[in-house]
Amino acid sequence: MTTADPKKKKKKRKKKESLEHKRNRILVALGIFAVVYALDEFGTLTAAFGTPGDIYASFMLFLIPFLIAGYDVLQKAFNNIRRGKAFDESFLMAVATIGAFAMVLFPDTDPHMAEGAAVMLFYQVGELFQAYAVGKSRKSISAMMDIAPDYANVEQPDGTLEQVFPDGIAVGTVIVVKPGERVPIDGVIVEGETQLDTAALTGESVPRPVKTGDDIISGCINMTGLIHVRTTKPFGESTVARVLELVENASEKKAHTENFITRFARVYTPAVTGAAAVLALGGGLVTGAWPDWILRGLTFLVVSCPCALVISVPLSFFGGIGGASKLGVLIKGSNYLETLADVDTVVFDKTGTLTNGTFSVVAVHPEAGYTEQSLLEVAALAESFSDHPIA
Image (cartoon, rainbow, N blue to C red; front, side, top):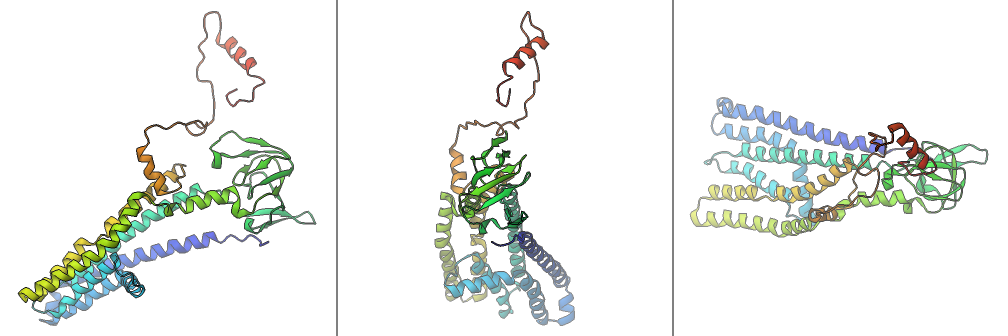
């Protein structure tokens, strides 16, 4: 058994720093781009380097924010080409923006370095907003799924309790669950009695009393007494682990719309790339105006890039799952979320789903011959031996 040493926070912090680094990188690139664009527009480069030196100076200066902002896109496109999976939005962005910079080889045409850098910057800004949206949804899901126990207490021969990772506990091990702790693994109580808060798993707001011999499930909170539990399942097969697995793999259960968009992108992207090549090569061969037609082919690539379509559909489903988790509703996958669009009737049967489970008398309306006090007394006597929550 391995002694518990939580490392999840470090992992989360690393992800957050990575997102902050990307944000800072894009902000730096935007700042440099704004300065270079101003120098170019106000004629400072022409005054300093003359003609055509200003074009090459502009090329070198705009290349700085382009590489700072888009080096990861270029790297992804290159790696995908090596794997034989070239046709994605990274490939289209790389070809279009590098092509815009390559127009410097045609000095007689207007320079397009600024457009190449701007397109990459705008694309990366959109990717950054997407990353923030996904991160927010993941945080909502993580907060909702904060039912996974970090440790289990195993009693040692000398009577002390050792905290160990739940996944290192064998079936049949007796663990100790103290008041206020979560039950880490499914099992049966061998000593003690208590009340369990099962709201996180069942939605039931009323505590459930349990005693020696009762089966209990992981993820519940022990509210009152100390209990000894003999585990009946390994941690990976316990209730809380299965629920976590369902939610974590929700993105794998794609909706019909997502599957269609994925298939569509596989056909659409190479078709667009081919059409852009035909437009550039065909127009150049027919008219001889190569710079103009190359520019048109590159423009066609940028305008036809399907990244917004390919990204927006999965992101909308993921945002829906995250938003529902924030409200306390777990959705096992995009396909289930899509099915909800056809639902016209919803039936609730649990206290705590539509109410908070806290009951109080708000008004007393006695009939003739009774007073409020006498009516309350009769009601209290009638339900004095009932264990119903309202009683």
